[in-house]
Image 1 (cartoon, rainbow, N blue to C red):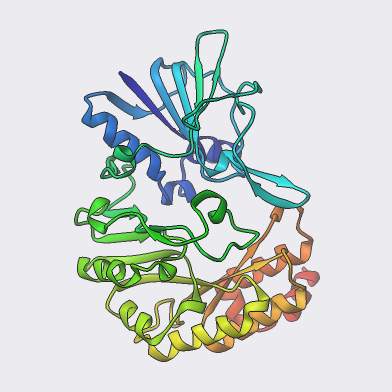
Image 2 (cartoon, one colour):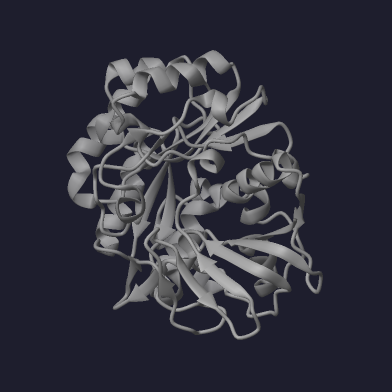
Length: 358
């Protein structure tokens, strides 16, 4: 069988932004599902490669992580076309992102048929079959990823030790996709085989009952670990921070998305600052994601930014629905996220005045 793997965020996302396979988010962050599918089909003896336009395949897999990546309605030369990923499931409804499975085939516009296994199909008149599926079979989900699919990835392993989150934040899709509890899904050895670097993608590992043993696995690896998602600062305790001290952390992120959780978030961050033994982010404790343009006022956004900076953390502004956001939020994001400017110009008012003079 000839199998083609299409990373939509890499191929279509770059094309839409006028880029040609440069150092974009898709380059830096490979598609984990496609790497697992590649490993599975290579074990079966199939001919596997990244999809090339105008070449004929028996089966093509299309995976899309980011909802902002446009869908390219190009003709795909394959008998079977499987597609999935959160990028196909997120819609903007009344200014809010909603996670739901597609009723219509995004490539043909046809209504898809439902099967008992939760798979949605669209057999076209040409004999092609489009198949949408949301979960990988067990034997593929738990296979060692084929990191050679992305030659630019050097000595780095990517994966999840836990899934799900108990918080149920309205702006987040983890509850709809993975459930409202945190649970163990793998041991580190399942997707790490000695690489010097590890990128951990778990949505809320500190809420998982197995947090201690999972963090111990990261510590025992001796690899440099990037905790890629915003850890739940509200769950930090001296015991958990001490466990984080054992890991060779290269990067760690926290999040202060809900202003109303101010006291709990700041208590956790203070615990981290008191018990963590080294500063990771260029002289700062860690980076903290700050969600804006959702349910806070500009005054509350600035309060969070100034408070985090005063505590020795690096705020990083995330703008919800950036396409329709007011100019204030885009300007705020530029000021905070451009580190050199943020540390040189101490207040947003001063930055805003300097931009107005240009």
